[in-house]
Amino acid sequence: MIIILKKSATKADADRLLKVIEEQGLEPLYMPGSERTVLGAIGDERVLANLSIDAYPCVDRVLPILSPYKRASRELHTHDSTVKVGDITIGPGHFTIIAGPCAVENETQIMETARIVKKAGGVILRGGAYKPRTSPYSFQGLEEEGLVLLQKASKETGLPVVTEITDVHDIDKMLPYIDMFQVGARNMQNFRLLRKLGKAGKPVLLKRGMSATYNDLLMSAEYILAEGNPDVVLCERGIRTFEQGTRNTLDLNAVPYLRERTHLPILVDPSHGTGIRSLVTPMSKAAVAAGADGIMVEVHVQPDQALSDGQQSLFPEQFEKLVAQIGRYAELEGRVLA
Ligand code: PEP
Ligand code: MN
Image 1 (cartoon, rainbow, N blue to C red):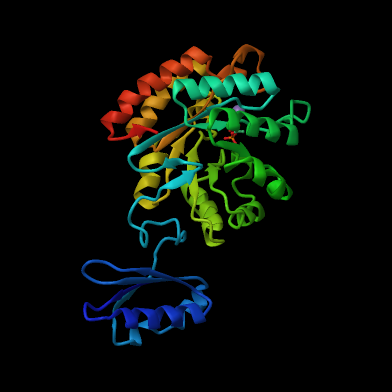
Image 2 (image 1 turned 180 degrees about the vertical axis):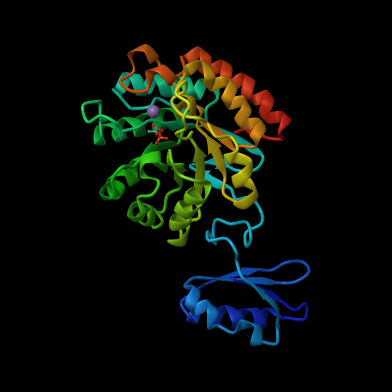
């Protein structure tokens, strides 16, 4: 619930209420404003209903938080959040380019691709060590060896790394190697994984499930936030529709729709969103115009040799061109590539 205090309320009044909220096992939030102070209480709805906060003389009004995703919603948290990944800031004023291969394949491939990403102006390196493939006979990733190589590429280039987690049991193993966990489309509703990532102490890139609604995505983000991790970044990566021409249908409606409802940063993945290399640059430009905080794109030193998603991976020179062009679009939107 949202608790609006009277103008005359003192800091001591607020502290007293915050204590009452905490004692009930609810999460208290303190938001002092220039006009008046607003408090929040989040948690078990039955406990909230019995709290009788409006009986306190310092309270002006009590309003329910209407959205089911209390922490992800803008209702209590009205300004846009920023999320730090290493020393990179994702959020307002910035346009973040995350790039790298679909999968880490070998040392030469990831090192060379990382250098290309860095030189062109990408700021975070991606690369899958654990790959959730549709077929069990496809390349499944180098696993721990992939993490070691990612870390090596990160150390040489200075780029922080994001990589996908596919099993809740891998969290501790992955922690020393990475800067951000990626939860892929296929795991967006793996609630036990989300809960554990809420306590893992690293930012999470949460990709929309291919058949997930906006509400589903926000509720999944809520699972992570509810465990105390505020550093969640959403990613639109295309959904399943009747259209067969593209791998997925990149739903750019998601960006302004989510923006109105959540304070969390929103990225777009035009690589998985289209599945076609030549569509990645135009849809990246569209993502900037839709108000995204950044993009995640697949780039490979030799896409025609890639072990996964070669058809949607950019050639190095295409990626360089993309970054150069996106900088101008981002500027129009008041954002800098950084
Ligand atoms: C990926 O980013 O490599 C990936 C597997 O994406 P998604 O989970 O969106 O399919
Ligand atoms: Mn991929």
